Length: 635
Image 1: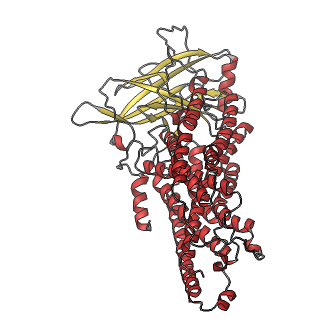
Image 2: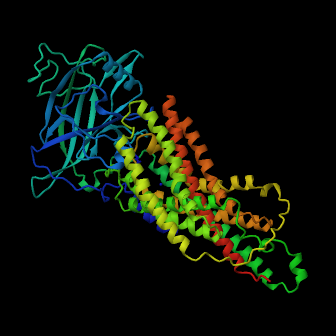
Image 3: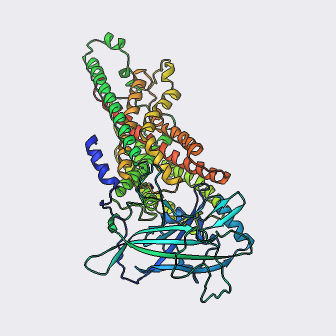
């Protein structure tokens, strides 16, 4: 199972990834929570999380369906990330005694109203699964691997029910829990290391019902129910459904620090390894080739230019030296370029720090909502660097309205994302899904934006604008040089689109696993791989942009500023195209609302990817252009 999860030399990277991927049972990671010790007969409280479906992508509260309710429903403390993901953790009627097996136990009886029966049928049709938690471990249903291996793999949660012949709906009303524990050899303390369930549908029979002491003829405390021992419980309006459960405790050799490892096993882990290594080798080979060509060509160019002895020879020369008087001319809409560069720096800082925390294990799946919370808070605090970068670049272009640029940096990208998010949230709210962000949380997000991020952007802008501007290595002519007619392959549209292919090629394999973890309700935990891919992405964006910028300058086209940003940023087009391909080939979404949610969120992701990669490409080209023009003698 792979969530929201819901991202150097080759030998070093492989070693790093092998340490960080942690598929082995004896690996250790920082789980984000302290272990709990239980004595025999201590009470264990099962908590209910949400109803989730990969067909609709709309989570619902557990008690949206007419399940057994405790006397008082209490919400567990939620962090920002859990709320944004639609996680609602509440108490339930399922309670166990530590290391004490229980046979069939009646939980409650409920009469299905027409509305309740309709809800159950709809959720069975959409293949909803029930998610529960015990001691911070999600409940899992054991299943056989597709390759026939004996190694156990798990599915998240259990199905609400099943359907036969398109008209008969059956509810999984009996749960057989298995709790695995690791016992301390020196004491009576035990720690929970596994939580499994096998659901079944059982039509319980009873003669008289007593709420204080419920008894049914098909369920005895001394026996266990098997799926084939009784007729299944059909979903019928105005009929009673009796919910029951049993629990067994099983000792295990798994240690607490490694208890998540079995949950994180993937069926296609070998494919992931070979695909990543293959991608890494190809990109490193391309990088080496590009670097070698660029170094040899540039070295020859600079030597030739510096050895020209007469003016006639200089006039006969063609290439990038001839545009030295225009190459640092301010581009059109340079204010907007500064805004996008500043936003990209903010996004880059957030991504880098988040990955470092994830590598260290602080954002592991057991720390629920930790990844989302970290990303939001880091984005807010990185506003300082956004303001600094945009205003400092703006001053290099000799701009004067730095406050206007600061406002655009603080509001443009977050405003677009928030507007899309607000519309999507309204759609989710209309579906009565628990995934809708409450008004209080929405207000908190706005406060983080206006109360912390915006002031930090202004502070950063003030500092950046006060610093001396970067000096150009060559002087800019007063009259712009005429650009000669360009070959078809050097036209902006074509070269920009070509430039985005390689950065996308560096990440598309990992993108598959990220999309799978987000949209197929799996855990994403392989941050070692993700960090490698991120490094490859940075190198690839920088190199492809530098190469195409060099070709552009050799063609005597000095309008490189925007093209450098768009060349790497165009990889976002391929990312969105891949998201469309993934939607039609891997997902089973049939509802219009779910499709709108998918493409809305992928639009936000693609926009963010554009800002990130574009900024990397821009700064790489800026460094390259300044380097080569400071290396030649200009008369």
